[in-house]
Image (cartoon, rainbow, N blue to C red; front, top):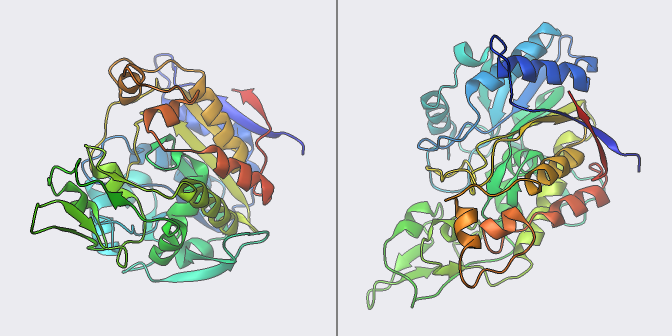
Length: 375
């Protein structure tokens, strides 16, 4: 397969030039203006950030993309779908409140905001997955599929299960309705090690299915697997490693389904993808908090190929040195540390991302082979 072009620019700017200007120039150089936007409804898919998190992409970045679309005759809107876990974005009303609290509005972004899967996360459409092995029809937010053109604007950072969150995760998991997210997450169920549980109740606060209770005998957490959907939020919430998923193929299965969901979203219409590799926190922006970055800010990447884009961003991260005092650096300093040769897996034991890109390439979403064009 012919290598895809991935365009890159760093965050350095001389006095008088904005990073936002650099993003606009990157889009122009990468060929986004070649898309026929005239009179088209354009979905800009991004993450509005869980309130309390400070690493999500600010509205200023979204406005650059929205203005670009409008300047080329398109009608843009920002979108994301409701979450499966408990938080401030589990229905459209709370989701919009959270977005506005984090600064997103028609004034700050230059366009409207539409929650892709409706009020309760049930307004979806089943989209066939061409070449899918695990998902035959992905459940995607209807408003996202109704758009004529699709643009993903992703914050590239770590993730407690998928290794990192980049373009494919932003598209595949992010565009899935609540039912779609359940389908992607339902391969394995976590278990509690009672001897490690401190009865802090943080895991229950993160559970969106009311699947966690506490034993009256010793106060230890207990997971009801009939209610549990295997989303893994409780694993990320536990500070004491008391919860784990014993199904070794769970992360790989999640990654493959995520790739298939992403393919359902992008097939059959013009698409363009942007990733900003900055504030590389160890966990997803779905968390209502964020740790310090594990790696230095790197730059902006853009491509018509989301697989090549994710691979280029990952390669750029692997070339960096861990930031002192970060979760990654502290884990690497542990006496029993095992080096996996991968910053994201080293930062969060059990996470993994290569299976996602391998499967995405296999089903024709894109190629991992790329030519990096520096702008």
